[in-house]
Length: 435
Image (tube, rainbow, N blue to C red; front, side, top):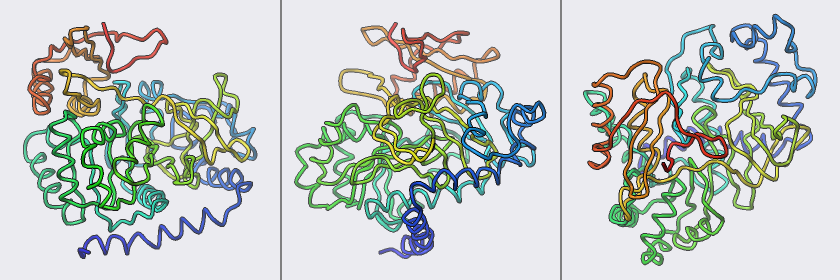
């Protein structure tokens, strides 16, 4: 074992053990009371320093102290589209943000929100506590089939990131392979690198992992010899349970799923024994129906239980969960997620391009508020950009340049500005839609 991975594991292990002890020693019927008490410790700061909730408190439309679930339910449900319009009203004004983070995803409407550095302390122990379900340690070797947004930029910052990935990742036992181009040729190369690298576990975009397994089916016996601890899907779900079983068959290991978003970070994780386990120590998760009433299957709401520059309070992610297990209204486990669906852009019959690659190429622009790619049956694509002001030619060319780095054919796609994006018959705005 290399020294740096060993030290990283030694540092995180006490925190993981503490998480294990906490979750195993807390009874299910104690969860809701614990969470409301923890929420009250940050609620006073939120209603003081976050304009949206401060206004509600002044008007006495929300309680100053949460004494019960009923009190908590008096706080309004907020969705991403509303926050996007009024992000300054949902930001903590008590101190300046350390950074601004931009979301990606399948909607094509990135949200830019403020963040503090100390928030990462909450994320780190959660990640390794969840991976411990599969006996994955921080010192283990990881192969990651993921986006490479650092390669799309320019200037000194781009090369600093490239160096950090080429030098820094090997030092901690990680190897990263681009999931932008998911053609059989690229996925065969990924399979060869997996066998050469000999990781302890693999993480990637869920649908990219399915294509990886399909392209390397003939290497199944060689993959089995690696004795992988797990293959973990992220950023999206599988199309069906059969895909998950197929990946397990090819790689000879359990297949798990992370449930996270840019805003929440890791929120829940599958357990080898079955359902998703919610990381309820730091997140109060609700499941509600269309009318906002508690339900076993329905919309997922998230309230973060620690200080944030952008506090999440009954925040709707846009996904639907089924089979929720609860203490009072607090979900501590659930069966499945619906709605997390990132389609592929097919450049030709054998070259699927993952949605995150398009997001990474476009979201650098502070002027673009949303985007959509429309295509015809003969695979002619047009990118439509939505912005509050007229985009100049430099912005357009910069996006084309970044797309060109992913695949030259992407750089040739026509780009137009629009005031309105098309919706599906269900009233949803998807990033990829047929004309």
